[in-house]
Length: 106
Image (cartoon, rainbow, N blue to C red; front, side, top):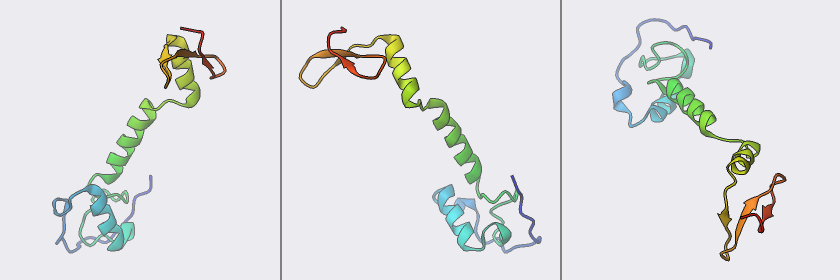
């Protein structure tokens, strides 16, 4: 990840506690010059993200990736557990290997 070099000594009139969220702080940071100019010192490590915004995004993406299943994995999970589902009219069915409903399978 690139880091942005800036001159030392900026005006420090805003800090992370002044914002309701790190996303709001990031928007302010970008409007005030972005990663190349940081007059408020919001991006101390120079990664282009303020107030731990980048770490929050990366952690959220990692959690989502770990918990989300692709359609094929969802089908494999359903097939492997042989779940019986109830249809809108009360009939029961299972999911076949091709992904179709099998109303005679329960």
